[in-house]
Length: 120
Length: 226
Image 1 (cartoon, chains in turn orange, green):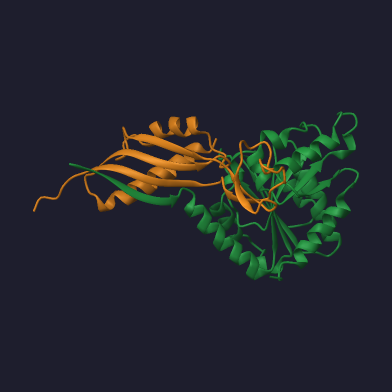
Image 2 (cartoon, chains in turn purple, brown):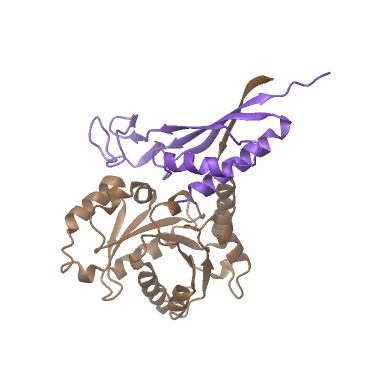
């Protein structure tokens, strides 16, 4: 249950990044989370409502894109996408894979804002 | 009003990752092998670590431990009986240790300097989920699993087992009465983390401890090599 601390850090980072856009309203925050990042999307969404209260992010949408796990298969000499996280074998040839290419990401991808236009 | 999409592409745990990178560099400069021990509550991390500290000390290795718990310093007191310097970290409700907590407790640790150590063990808060996201700068992450927990634990918590560098099965002395299915447990660990080193141990009888100490010595010796 560390989703609240993760979301709090998202709110902090987004708020900091808004310094360049004074008065802007946040519409949407988009995250990229690997299937093996050990966070629960529903729990992130639940915490988001609480953590954004009283911040410039209040009322905005949280969108979480979940990235599948991608391993490198030495036998196929290719990167392969896993179907689930119950077996770390190449789905094509069955070779056990130990090099991860994707799956642990936890990133803020982008923020959609309504910008206040500067009046000359 | 204009709608604009601001690309951030920023790691959410960037602050922790940066602090962890700093710690990793200071461990390397000091020549100390740092291990992060992670398991459920009740797996026997403390008993296993107590035995490890005692055995390493008996071999004249310079060891110390940081131990994380929500509350109490019970574990620190247990571990200190080994004669090694031990410092408790109370997280007061936080379910994992992070790099900032480790940095603070190393900095203000009276009588302990990284440069004077061969091994530093970090016993994480008992939790198989949250600690996996937080890099503490460790060289080796050890996932522990006891024979009482069920052979499918690695399948239930793939994130943690997949991020581990070594796996330790504890309480092997009671494997039989618990009906522990050794083959299945080993298979499941290998399914999640192919090729991982697995140690089957008992802190009580000392089973598997020699092999584990051998691994530690080997990893410590490899520190300086590129």
